[in-house]
Every structure is written in structure tokens, then in C-alpha cells.
Image (cartoon, rainbow, N blue to C red; front, side, top):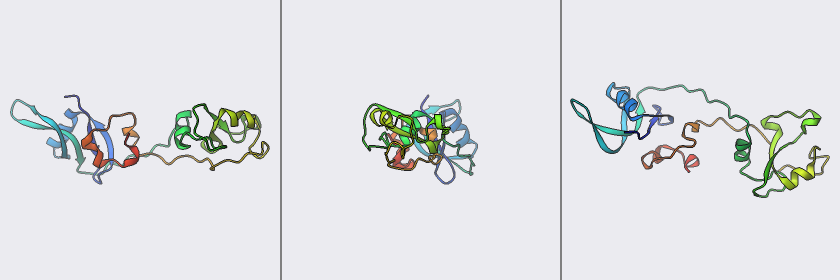
Length: 169
């Protein structure tokens, strides 16, 4: 069975997605408890095992929350696909350096914002003050996301009660 299994920490926070085989080993060894199961069973030589869908570890796992990498996609997500100068949601979005690179502005979370092509051309290598433009919000690095393990994954129905609404697709 190739279905993924959601692994929860002792406090019910998702920490991983593993294979059914790994989940069965954890449950069998008493290191995890079965919370939800897939439809169907797995047959071993000596017994029948329920196919796990969600398991909870019997101990806490400390996972360092890695900072989000600065990329075009992540900046667009942070800014909710909205131009930070005019406030419009358009399809021709670009990245803009608040303090331009030619003025030694850094390529950091605090200096990069989403801008539509029109506003980016209007700003044209100047600071917002020089271009007489205002930023809608002050750019900052997003908080580390503990749910990145679920990014680009299909969220199974059985998982939804264990996942905050903001990460569901």
C-alpha cells in the first residue's frame, strides 16, 4: 500500500509524512498510536493489521523550524499576490527591491516586495519616497511554517481534523 501516513507529535502537531510500512513499525513497537486508518487491511504472515492513515507519536520530537527561503513564490505568498504599492491583485507581478540594488539595497525579506509591472516601472530604480509612492505594508520575513511538510501534498480527508485550516488546499 503506497498511501501516505500523517505523523503527529505527542501534542497532535503534524511533524512528518511517512509510509504505511514505517507507520506500522512505529505502532507495533509501541512508539506510536493509531488514530485514523485507511480503508482496508494489510495481511502479514501471522496477523491482519489495519492500514494507518494518521498516527501519533508517544513522545515529543523537537524539530527546528527552518526559516523560509527567499524566493519569488514565497514573496508572492507573503504579500498575498497583491501589489504592495497600488494594492491590486493582477497577473503580471514582479519583485521589487524597496531600496534598489543599485543603491546597495539588500536582497532580503525586509527589502523585497511584490509589485505589479506598472508600479515597478513607475518606481524605476528609486526608493518609494523618491518615486512618491507608499508601501501598503512594511516587508518582513515570514514566520517559520511548521506545516511545510504538507506543502505540495494531497491532504487526505482523514487528516483534515489534525491540520489547521490555513494549510488546507
